[in-house]
Image (cartoon, rainbow, N blue to C red; front, side, top):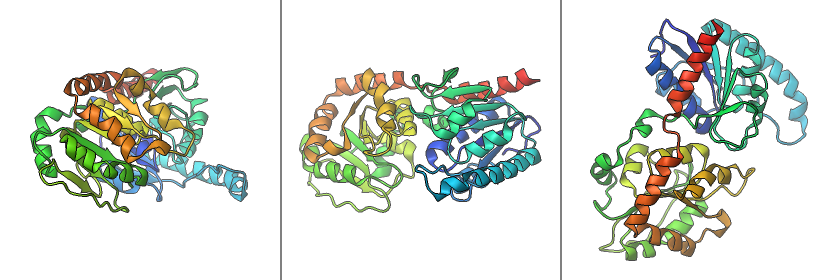
Length: 366
């Protein structure tokens, strides 16, 4: 898939899906604009990229991970040696593949990549979060271009482009797929339906609160598609005659899950917010209760635009879920307004915009 004769674009964004998926969406967009381009991904043995990248048809070059200690400890003392070793190996990879430009998406793959590429090729930094990670803060200091998902990141000269998304999500026609999606998941064909998920591993607080509202949903004629996570179990009371409450460990077909739904209740990682906005789904966002508060910031523009509601994890109870979801789901006019606001709050073209930025940077260096 990536054995072209054109420029070699190296993408560095490993560890979590939030770093990997935007990198692969960019790779796809570059190939659409320059079919002769060669794409190479950098990754580590410990990240999800080990399986995700090859499955999408791109070559993956392994480099040593450089995790940044959050607190002063013995790992911090070892950091300089680890960084030097990782830079050396990464530089060898960049030379071997004939890299013409590096595009980094943060995480522990990006830091050694930025330092290895510095002064040797153009560097573009992309960050998906409202609060910029350490690796991207370093890379942004000497990058040729800096792209971000939203304004207000504090990075000088940052260009707001949004988050690159898979073409299958950007071009998803929910209405056209609705009947197929409902049948696929065994859902009621016409009832208002809520999609629920808590990330790749699920979220117990979401699981408990939403399943606890099952009777309220049944009484209101609302169906539910609930991905509870492969490590969790979910026991939901059945109500004969009511739309189905379908619980699954995980969602293999996210496109069909979005198409089946009229609204979604989920966490608000940057990728999730971008996808939900792109497909035009009204949302109830529940930020992670730990971290540095970036999830609430990610969802802020959607809430402000009227596309979403937000409830804190500590306030998440069955009664709270029912009080938010039932009035929303049983008001078609409100759902239409929220859907329109969601589509207007995203950057559906982000992958192509970033791909043009990459290719323009190559032209400028010639």
